[in-house]
Length: 279
Figure (tube, rainbow, N blue to C red):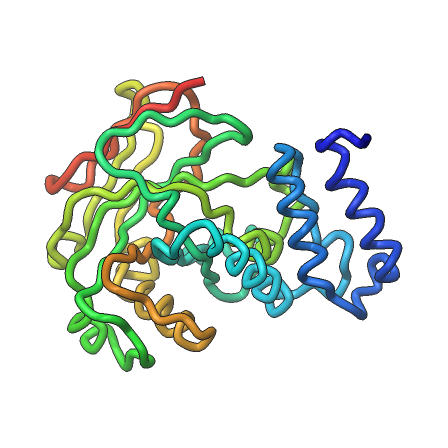
């Protein structure tokens, strides 16, 4: 019997043999989803699809993401959505022309002061601003002012994604989109007034040492501008964000490796989030 850790590579070889390797003429989203799910289950690295399929683009990445999301919905409900690469520098690094999004699940939502363990893959840590709605959004928003009428409040969020690739320098943004934007867990704090997040300084401390900081203006000028992009993109792709879901607007600062220790993230003078990562 083949050990589980060998299955993703075996499936990859079978798929490439059946599809004419990197020619990219036929894209089999379900087979790629099988490979990704097998890799995740075996704690094996994910395939860099853009390196195997010359035709893999953003449209195909979202096609693959949709298959993975539909399968995940058999076990958990949608807990929110995340905008990614809302900073131009991050888009340039990962060869993306626009921001992108992924789907978060209720099984990944955290509150309070949790203790996390890096069981399969290294944990990453990002500071973000999220939003929660007062009513569903079922149409395109015309402007930030239009959008404000649907928003109940902002929330501080620490996103804790997983990027199970051995070399981040070898992947493109479309690879991350295809695997559903590395979505895993997200820590949500107490509500913030919308005025509180204007030009808000955010700072992360690891064992009392500042390791990351930034300003909410780095997120497309204002997190509400990123939210406007996100809800309109979701509408165009068939999603209708609901009250109770959390809408993340992109990283403030950088992607931080989740080292074992104690973390404190201060959102201006309004709120502090704390969590611990164990070995």
